[in-house]
Amino acid sequence: MRVLTRKEGESLDERKRLILNAIIQDYICSAEPVGSRTLVKRHRIGLSPATIRNEMADLEDMGYLQQPHTSSGRIPSPRGYRFYVNSIMEDYILTPAELNRMEKLIAAVGIPFSHSPRQLAKLLAAVTSYISLIAEPSDNIQEIRHINLIPLSASSAICIVVLSDGNVKYHAVSIPEGVGPQEIDALSTFINRRLQGILLSDVNSKLLQELKAEFAGNLGLIDEIFLLVRHLLFANTQELVMDGATNLLNEPEFKDVDKVRELFKTLEQNEQILKLMEADSRRLDDLDIKIGPEIGLESFTDCSLVVATFTLTDHKVTLGILGPSRMHYAKTIGFIRWLREYFSSGGS
Image (cartoon, rainbow, N blue to C red; front, side, top):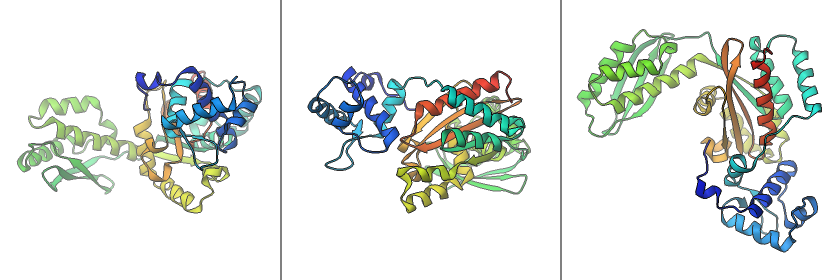
């Protein structure tokens, strides 16, 4: 999650925070640009429409709001959502009705969630009305058969990794300045000698430290190779379960057929989605949020992704909720935290 600097956080006084929060709350519910008169009617801000308009203009100049049409109100920008999530958003407590629904959905499953990630995905898609993504350990554990580095230029090379199931992966890696062909060959020989026949699941930080201690060459290059192998570990030892893809069709932001087509194409690329969830996953007691352009995929520009990692009985799963940038962040996080407490207290 990108954290705003202290200077950025202090750039909004209490009045601007109040107005930004009100606009975001209204826009989450209505998906319609919010004007000054609407704020006066719906919120006890205690300011005139003219004063609110001036403050909204300032927030737009500062990058927290956008004006989609000349005569319309404002909508939050990705920067506005980021400030809201980091500095304004309050914890959401599930209502009795929401708790009752969660408990009924869990009871209806009838089998432990630890044995059925697909049912867990269905539950999350149902309660959030967004897309749920779950990455869980796979039984398909591969060995490394061969790794080869082929220089493309003075600054880049192709790393070819052959796995025991015959799968061949190609990835570009950066070559640190001053590293020549002889050192690249030496690294290829060294990496193959140390990693050939090793299970992807056995590749960890301890092994990296051992490799660094043994290798006499450029450590920056060995870091590149290790990160690549770690990515292969996640992609080849995780299975992706998804539910609720059609939920986004109910959101006004996704009425454009071409936009939806591109988004669905991306969702079909399991390895890309797993990589995205790997990059976002954090410690067991943490979660991560990426908003719009922060996700790094053009087809997800109007989306936000909330990712959390926690334990189901005897193994960890990485859970993602993908929705519009206009998602109800506090409520979505509230559902995730409730589930985490449910599993940590013995629920299964």
